[in-house]
Each structure stands twice: as structure tokens, then as C-alpha cells.
Image 1 (spheres, helix red, strand yellow):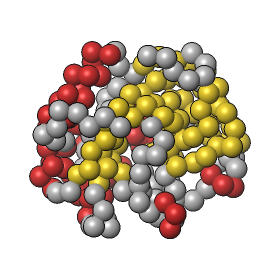
Image 2 (cartoon, one colour):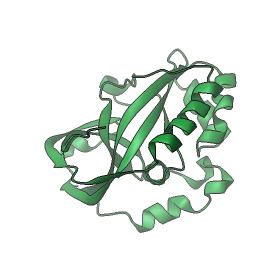
Image 3 (spheres, helix red, strand yellow):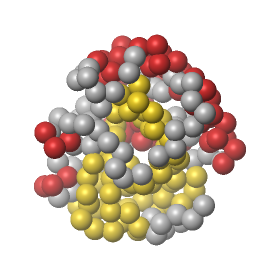
Image 4 (spheres, helix red, strand yellow):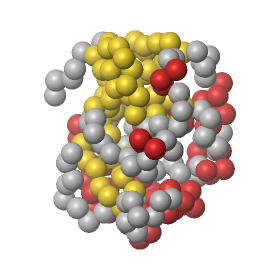
Length: 197
């Protein structure tokens, strides 16, 4: 599959989750949106984007015991707040809208967050479904560091970078077959053949 040469869009995600996605440990994200008014309804309007690592909201107690110590590891590698380093780019292959706890429980084994935290995400703004997105992740062979602009700040999901970040050579976190096997497991758990974006 042909990948673009640059990207000007990024999605904010916990640095610890970016690491899990980038290593192939996890292929999904759970989102309800940001806090700002214009971003309160999370929508996958950009099916391809860079992963923007964030540090301020991630807490060790919100992760399963199997991920103990990983938040601290990301903090050791954190750059200055004046810049952001992009190490991974991804493409959304599937998205699902989860409405109830039973659906959420069915995919618990496929993500790093505690069941309690995942349920809190589900119940926040309860009239809105929780978006589960499956990401095909690629590692940039040459990480790209750019200055953090004022418009990047705040509790928003999507960040328009205002510049084309070169992707260069990339390597897939998982092979085609590995990714499809994992995605099929999640699709099956949610009772869906596919929910391609």
C-alpha cells in the first residue's frame, strides 16, 4: 500500500499509548473527544495522521498492571515542551461506535487501560457513543521534531500542524497478516465483519 510522503495532521494521544501502538502491542484507541467546545464530539474526519504524544493526562493507575512502569519510561524520554517529536504515522482501517458496557468489556484484552477507566470514558457525555478506532501504525525511520505552536496547545484531539511533516522511510508496526489477524479478533469481539472508515 502506497503511503504519503508528508502529513500535516496529528492526533493527540498519551505517549504511553503511542509506544504501545508503535510496538504493535495494541492497535486500537478509545476516544470521546476533547474538552474544547469545537472538539467535544470526536469524529474521525482525518483517516491518516501522525501520532502526537502527550504526557499531562496519563497516569500509571489508569493502566492495567501489565503496563506497570511504562508511564515513567515515557517521561524519561520526554522532550522539552517547546517541541514535539513525531515517531509514528497511522491510517484508520476500522471504526466502531460502542454504546454499552458489554461491548466495551468484549475488547478489554485488546487495550492497556483499566476497565474502570475505559468505562469512565464510555459514560462521559453518555449520549455520545465511544469511538473505537483500529490503527495501522508505521514508524518513521527518522523521527521529525517540530516547534510547538500556540495553536497546538489545549485539550483538543486533532492538531493541524500548519506544515507538511516529511514521513520519509517507514516500517509497519505489524505485518499485513499480523495486523489483519488482530483486527479480525476485535471485529469479532464487537460482532462486526468490518467497519472500514
